[in-house]
Length: 251
Image 1: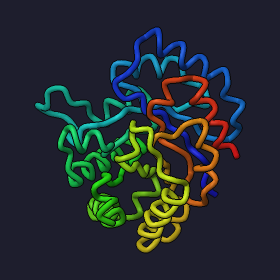
Image 2 (image 1 turned 45 degrees about the vertical axis):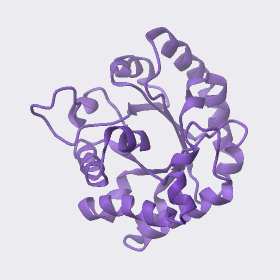
Image 3 (image 1 turned 90 degrees about the horizontal axis):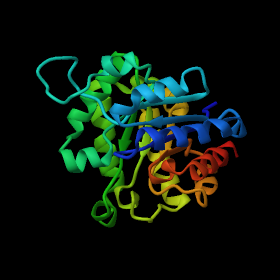
Image 4 (image 1 turned 135 degrees about the vertical axis):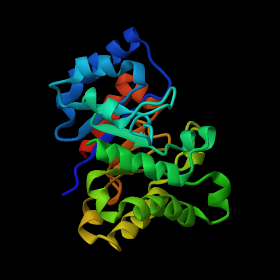
């Protein structure tokens, strides 16, 4: 049976002092959400801090992107092997901000997915459509293209060691949220696309919703049959909100 996962994406936020206060508050509440898995994906400079504070606890940590290259003359890049040295469990690949602001194409995202798994990391693959694409009734086509790029390179079986996050771009940081029914429809489509190629893998794949998840709407979203938790942006920076979302995942 699929377990729930709530992962915080801090994006480019944080400081040593802020992070310490946030993680201490989350750690103090960790027993209150039972067997829900919790993780935080932090900026590269704070991996040492996250590793030091979270090692030996129930909270996992990871990074927000990774290079598709193993090593070499790629100034400013960070490899999967480097992340693994800091005991990262997860790494986000293909976040909509990386696709839109940094020009990461689906084929590059697929390479990052493969690189992450090759070093023993669990990729959190982000896929989702813009408002224009949704209005043009292209949601399933866009999501399928982004998913298929990874399937073609890594195979459907690779999703047994991965997480997918559906993030409608129009609902990220806008205050808008897909209704539970809208999100469920896309999650069901994603699961069916994997199941068509690897039935058991698709059934057990954890698919998170990411798009302005808040304490107020988390329980309703997480109650949907194909929504297995959330990839949380802004609310993951507020301890009370993040804790409430983790508790909501408990059901």
